[in-house]
Image (cartoon, rainbow, N blue to C red):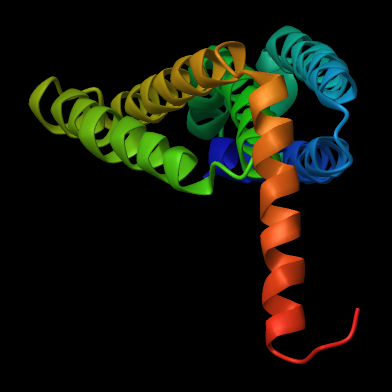
Length: 192
């Protein structure tokens, strides 16, 4: 519960950066500025990765005392100490995932992002979690390894999607969506 609370708390910051990235990318593509959209991707990934690495290093360095923020029980503190390296990796992966998902949304690729999310967590992360927790008897640590594996797979696939993006084509698609929406509103009798 300690690791879940910590990663959830940190994720909200990264989700906000991802939402901002989504808005900026979609605005730049909609205005026909693919180079600016690509620049936004570089900036938000740099910000997110830098922040996540700093937080992860701090948590890793404080792993011997970090558990005391949640409990005075020595067993809990020792378990948190053992799992904190996974937590640090999870924070980096979740941060990248949040921003890369925002970029995919900004490009209008929500369905692709949803499929990647489903595949990474339900077809890869969950089976690994179950095997490591219940078959290999790693308990909570096994569950967390599966979650981190799912996050890592999601980051890899979203990074490939982002790297393979043709920004000129995405700008044309965004312009077409805007034009199609304006035509639909005019046909429905709504003044612009």
